[in-house]
Length: 292
Image 1 (spheres, one colour):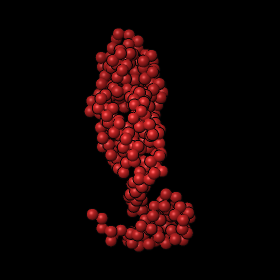
Image 2 (cartoon, rainbow, N blue to C red):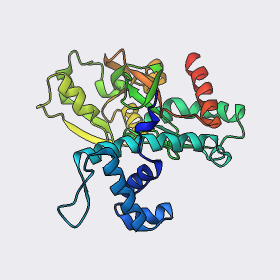
Image 3 (cartoon, rainbow, N blue to C red):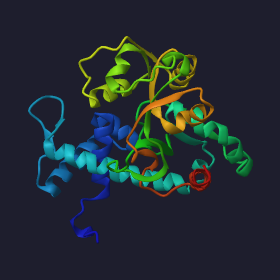
Image 4 (tube, rainbow, N blue to C red):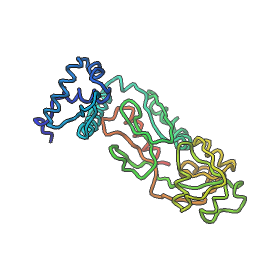
């Protein structure tokens, strides 16, 4: 239960948040359509109400104190959720394309081959697919849902398991020439392919106690090109089983090691009211995962 009597005036909180985001009282005043003097007064009122200094005024530029930074983080999260809720309920936001973030390998191997069914089921929903090897947090007006690999439990985000998919180390029959590696150390003698922007090769070798060993060669390429190169025999690749499932079944690639059997892909969203296109996509992708 919120104790409304203890909260500062909303105008003071808005002024403080606008100042933090813009970096000056003048720009904060422009953002809120008030004078910079009004912003300065609201900031002083807020400090008085809280009984704590929010700014270090020892220099010409206002710097946030420890207390000020803590309040800024709380307000950014709170106002962000309010903004997301308002956007989700507005007709303008309902027309914004659905933005899905995921890794390039997941997009190429699993999502793209199925998107035709989503488009057939929901012809009125436009979509933007934002593949990136970097972790991308969902945020209002940007990414609606991220499909992220791991074991879940990302702080400040809602996540639900979508597909289990262990980590696999693969190579082509042409690369191994019938001499399959028996232990991780045997792989040092091979060239390696690594998805651009990731450290999967480094992390896997380190987990095997081989952090200080140098492999024959290491080439970083986009995720889809990494799988193509592995099929040709250009090198060893570390990826998820889903990304190479068809290649393993067809014999184009051989799995020599498998780990992280408890890990997989998760649907990751921001805690907020979900707009209709996102709800539709989540319903659809859950069904697709259930029949995979």
